[in-house]
Image (cartoon, rainbow, N blue to C red; front, top):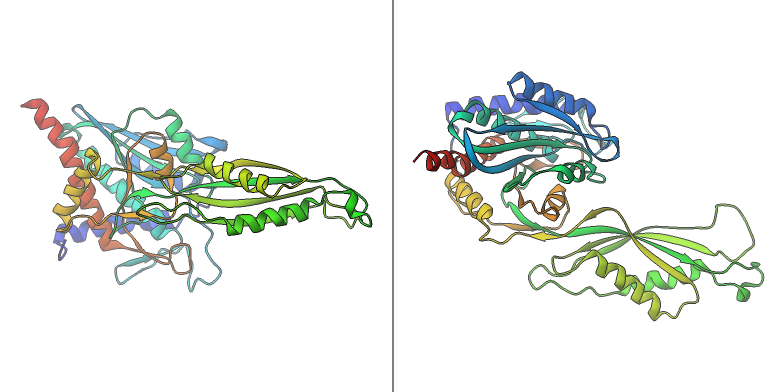
Length: 389
């Protein structure tokens, strides 16, 4: 954007105030109630009808819907309001929301309360001018993205048609229109118990699981023609009941964190593990199930109308076309796209995400807001102009 104008400086100060308010409130996954009340109260004070609505697992989301003056498309903007726990090596209070040199420090500042604060400021501006545009704007502060995405799953389960969504995650320099998928695969190996001094009379679930784990470690995934191979990682292994017993273990289970590309599916992952087990000719029984959370991979086309509208706004504000990246992590955008809502990731960034002394860039918040507003102007304000012409 170049040098900040006086108006931009005022906007940055307001954005910093909102962000500081959000960062100062602890909001671990599943414990978002306090920060959601802060968000809802701020919106309500600005004259915006904000509701705290049920999500999955007894959690809640904050949702605000603003109607324009005419018929038109529906634009969604927002993101998750939960954070990970602050690490022990912070050099200051992680909830103090200190500002130093254009950076606001604190847990969740970058991921992703800066994006939420920017979305809130954008929604307020659109609400103040709602007589000049057509369509609907939906803002939501979602719960539980850092864990099971129960907020996003609860939202999409009842959402009506949405023409495009901006998940305000910290993808600033390179917005994302595609991402890898992820599932947890639970593998249960059942053998046959026997006395530990007569192991040949049983089938050790531990030994058979070990054989399968080696096969999984050696398993070569089919590559995506552009993005390469996805990865998988065994997260844990458990067996027995924790007591000292002289017997052949008949039960062992493990969990695999399995990522997959747009040319793969979770069901193919299950079939792959089952195929490896069959190839071992094991005497144990193997059962593979998909456990939550589940995130299907997605890839929006570059010529999708919402993507091209965003690209035009990004270019007008920043002076350059977006260099999209394929995201090798999952987010609520996977949930939205899986529900048929075209969703891209773009928002202010910073550094030290999920680490000590996390910070968000206040200038990037100003730029991201300008992109959001330009996109709204292109999609919503011009809708009204067409309707009135």
